[in-house]
Length: 100
Image 1 (tube, helix red, strand yellow):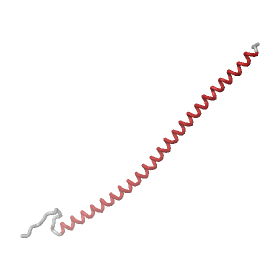
Image 2 (image 1 turned 135 degrees about the vertical axis):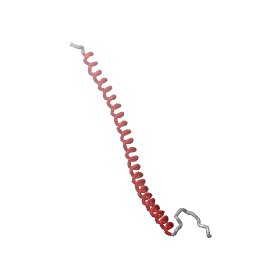
Image 3 (image 1 turned 90 degrees about the horizontal axis):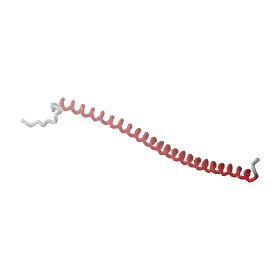
């Protein structure tokens, strides 16, 4: 049978091991929380960028539509002007006629 002194040392070792384990768990939990917090920050930043890019994309699509309408209008104006010039005998080539 173990002596009294041997029994006293037994629980002390378990407590030391338990304390070490608890310390490691606390450090690990802190590291996990820090990592998760950092990941949330990265996700938040990414989502903000996504929202900004979607808004910019929508703005650019509206701008493209506007420019396409303007181009269509200008082409129609050019065709109308060219047709008018041909009817007037100007040829639409921008030529100048000299008086005879």
